[in-house]
Length: 193
Image 1 (tube, rainbow, N blue to C red):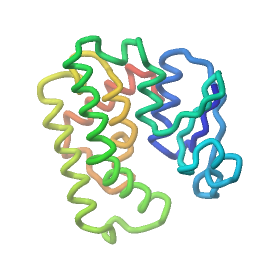
Image 2 (image 1 turned 45 degrees about the vertical axis):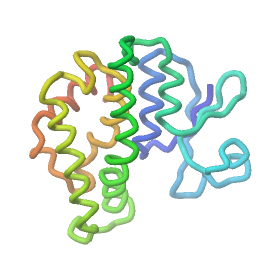
Image 3 (image 1 turned 180 degrees about the horizontal axis):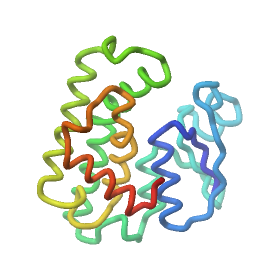
């Protein structure tokens, strides 16, 4: 399997972490989005959306979108709850991550870390919604060790990717002690350095 990914992207790292956790062999193809490497004719032939991550499965079929990829890779593994309701809760968190977390926490991080914008110059609504997403995580972790019960799942993989780096976007994780503890717990479970 080939994984096209940019190592600065939490969405790409999700794929790497799941493949490594499951012991799946893969070739990582570093694809620098800041240099336009996801816009080459070769890449666009594999993924017309021009986005990373992208995997090319062993049979040659391409698959894009981080959460779709990790769901495919983890099929039948302990990263997906066997209980139907818990599996649906996992998906609920994963959908929420792409709609209500990543667009704020990851975007703020990009502006500060890679575009050189000062935290004070970020759009206030971006910061407000990012903090709202982190608070939602804090509240969700009040009842269990992981987002869906007592074992790591794809919900945790999806959400830890950018949460662990939220400080790079100016967010103070000290305001979210349950989130801080959860990040360490997920990193340990997945063996993320």
